[in-house]
Image (cartoon, rainbow, N blue to C red; front, top):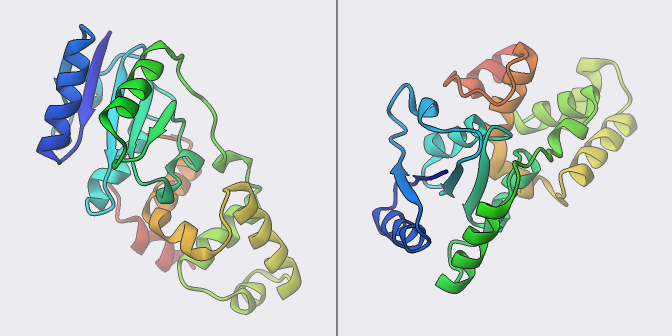
Length: 206
């Protein structure tokens, strides 16, 4: 088993590598620019992924690993990435070293995680969520899809509840990843990073 580290933060990368080496594991630093970086990861390996909202292109690559290997997320809990991906452990990037080490040990012992709240959304809930994230109001969506505004609000509320969100502001940081995830589901190749301009794709399809 290897521990793979994916982060643009050189200090965090060094710290995680030190902790993993202390536990006796081989470390691999993933280069996200490499076209075959997934070939380096086996199903029983652990990927330590730094979810930095200042690195949106890097952030979207988390879908590449979801459900395919053990996954430990370091980042802000406000991002709620565990609602879209199969993640074993989530630790806040401001957590003390002892907590990070505890989560690292827990992730190493864990089996691959397959929990995924996004797939619990119905087709209509996902469609309405995508349109809301693209800037459409409930009244506009109602006219576009032939539903009442009350029904649109109900689907929106259900989608937010299933994703653990209270308002649109809880969802907005995940906008691009939701578009990416929805695109994959439409193609039938869920959790494979394709690098398409998804914001334009969905805005142009409305």
